[in-house]
Image (cartoon, rainbow, N blue to C red; front, side):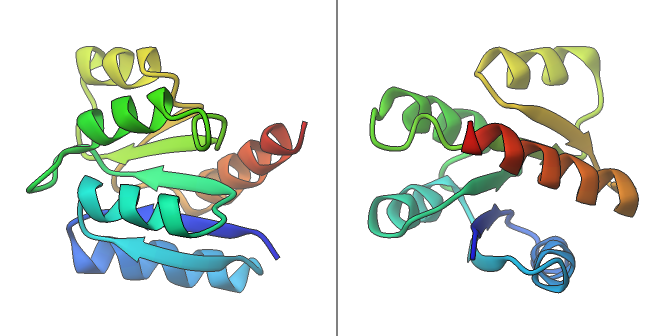
Length: 124
């Protein structure tokens, strides 16, 4: 079974994403900031990362930079899910090698499809 890491400082956002993912058959790990996400990535087999951008301690931008520099985890598909919807934020996130960028609140069908498609790409 594939494992998804959900990294978001907002409890409700994590719980919503986790509930949807579990219903789709995924195992889910949760982190409240970039530091926690990186620790989980170093100690667990993760198949997909869902990353918020604006978080305390370490934001998503910094966490993504660290992830993409680590040869052991850099190829894990990563989807940014953020309330930031301006072109600058989207372009910055995608330039860090995120596979997708979803804005909050996300559409349930689009969320499921983008997760499924990113999982397929990660299997290649």
